[in-house]
Length: 423
Image (cartoon, rainbow, N blue to C red; front, side, top):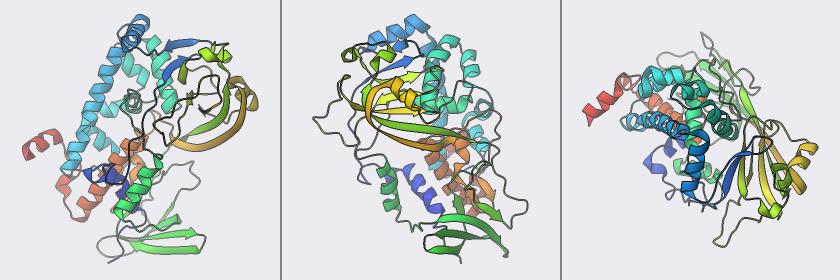
């Protein structure tokens, strides 16, 4: 028999482990990073439309005074979506899997969840009584900071983003990258450090066999696999897309594009005058979100080190600090001068962060062929670490159930009822 899917499927195993109890932070040597408080505000290019204070009740009063009960209606909408989304953990605990994104979403929220991928955040929120002003000022700012997109993006991805903005997030002492290295060590996967170029369906009788070709500094190589999991985006504008050979019909790729994101780490003195504070000592905010204006940056925040000592404190506003600027394009020198009085250094990273979510993008499938799977399919509905972990667990269960022909565990209807009866 051919080798197990140890090259690409290892990535699925890593993320699948994150969705189980076997990947508790303490088990892989991770510690929660201490949070350092900081106030937030939303800037519209001229002034702050909403400012956070140190008093919870005053923050609630300000939200009510400016926007009525829109913030309560938003919270209820997000909580309803998340309550249904959390069903996936019960389904996966009982071994159920789905061959397509639409089937997975339908099992969680029926046609309402599927429709949320085809209608905008703004449309969905207006329907439940959230005001247009609240959407323009607050919702759009959160979506720009997380996805770099507006309230015209699909409602399902928007709900995932808004859920993450309500707190309860945590980071790892030493950097979140330790999650990946810790899971890699936990799974004891055999990793081949190479770039996969082609996946070829081999002519065999019975179960399919896949030839995976790859290349690295040492040259080229190939191996046969019974199961292959693609854990990288497959879309038309991806120049590094893997080639698929010998498949009839051909393997489809997603008809969509990815959203470019630029993050600039600037060590310097913030130009508080641009934000309406001529005296930098009086500037109170550590995190600044933006509405649709100004357009040259989406969010700005005073970041802390990955290792935080007990004596650590944020820099005073008049002191030089490290600021993270998220923008759709690399910042021009003139734009840096707008945001900073002066600066010592700028480090920039640019990458295709996640799909450019659109109501017109069709939902892809996890199953590309009999035992060929695509983990990243779910990110076209919503993109986050948790969603990717869910997708990985689904693909792991899907491969397992298909291999052992346990087809009753795939694409089942009315799973809430089935799960209750199994208990």
